[in-house]
Image (cartoon, rainbow, N blue to C red; front, side, top):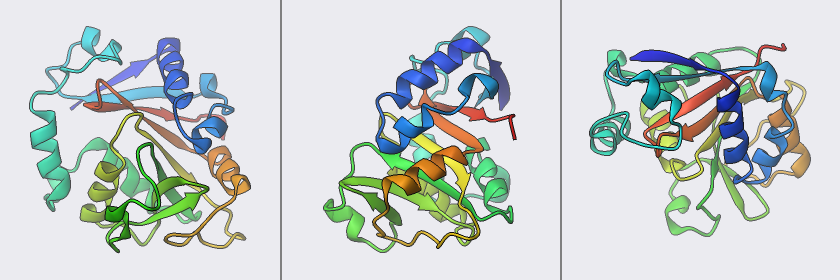
Amino acid sequence: MKEFHFGPEAIVYIREQLAKGLTLASYLLRLPLEEGVVRAYLPDTASEEAAQNFREGGVREGIFLDELASYMALPKEEEDDSLTTLILEHLAKSDAPLVVFEDAAGSPEFPAWQSPKHQYFIFNSEVYHFLNPQDVDLRRIHRTIWTAHVYPFIGILTSRSTAEQEIGDRQKVTADTLEKLANRTRHLVIGAYDLEGELIWSRTDQ
């Protein structure tokens, strides 16, 4: 995999995507995005021109078949992708880390979400899939990513205050909780390349 770095043009794209998101995304728009750094991890065959074209696919061949099989199976450690590695590193921290993905197409009444293998919290009619420090399992991480992998794909690597109560499965949260999670975001994950990849924004002001 090759790492690409981007400038202001990536911030414009990220803001466009956040504007299409749920309530959490509306709070993320308030972050000092221009003060962070943006990167993407793409195959070695991806050109600089293709990497700069965030709105078009074709940067990975066979993405949906190959990566869907990888995410839903239990891969070997050396097969981890960059996003999974970032999530694992974040969850290993000791500051009450949390990973949250918006579900742009989901609803608490969606029959598939009644299965215990899906973990989410609710704000009004919005569904947010999440991972906590106990979820350092590749199968669970991959399932969570693909469950939320719809357009627009928006996720955060954040934390809660250690003084705050843990967020539980199926719990209803308040707008204040979403705002606090947004404010504590360390990394922001935004779907790009027709959902063949992601832009990862990381804050540098903390």
